[in-house]
Image (cartoon, rainbow, N blue to C red; front, side):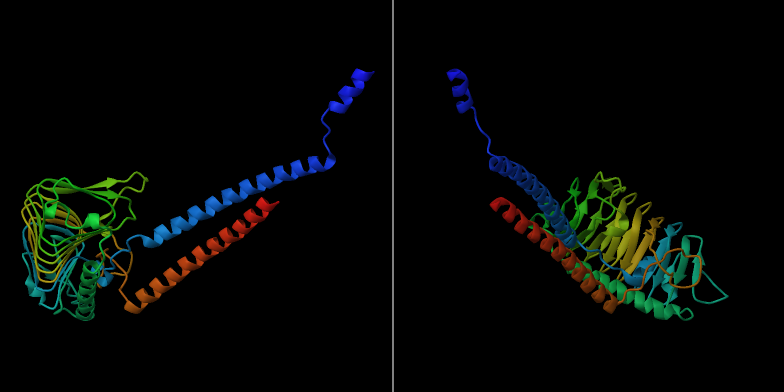
Length: 344
């Protein structure tokens, strides 16, 4: 009997209050874990929004994006070249488009056609509204060039890569700049997604050797990789593309662009002087809006509007800040909840 009594007295007694505290602690720990998970989720979302806001915005071409080739002083071709998209010149007369054997549309007088052009040819001497639209398009070309030239370099690592000799280089999304000319002799790579923006600025010329090429590489997100419409070459000098060479992107060139025998481009040539082609192939990327005029060009883009762009940027930034503020507020509330749970 004594042994039984001792055993009873030495057994651990769990007080009901202790059991309640233990249960409350378990609930508090679960609550804290849930709050911590939410905190991490909202934090990740905020970081994603900030990262998206910091991404390189596209260069807007405005109505210049209606053209595979648009120049101020002329376009010449050594037949037969193949141009998929519209071509246009302004303010120089339509006669500055040479080698195309142009046939003017007699019904409207607003454009011409050529067997070398899958699209239409436009000049300021054609019937209205062509001259007016060409003036706008050339103005948009100049704005796009200024925009591209004024972009800040993404990082110091993107400045003067290879002292301008970039053969074999691989480029990710961002803005790159050279205080020299840029050249490559074999191949360069542009690596990213279909929404990534690439801007290449140079104070000199862009010289592409015969047979050299640009290769687009899918970053692995399944979107198909970089697209020519999102690759911009801002060239303060001239562009020379050697025989059989291949380029990708929008060429914003301050002087002239020369494409030698059998060379090609997936993109657009927007030149402030002239473009010369020698049996070259130019394929404009699709653009999603009304064509410049006439019918059948199939190359379309929205007209640039400065006020609209400003409003769009302000609204976009404001909306982004509101979203970030919302998630920041939710995060703050959960932080308060986390502190309260910790005290318990």
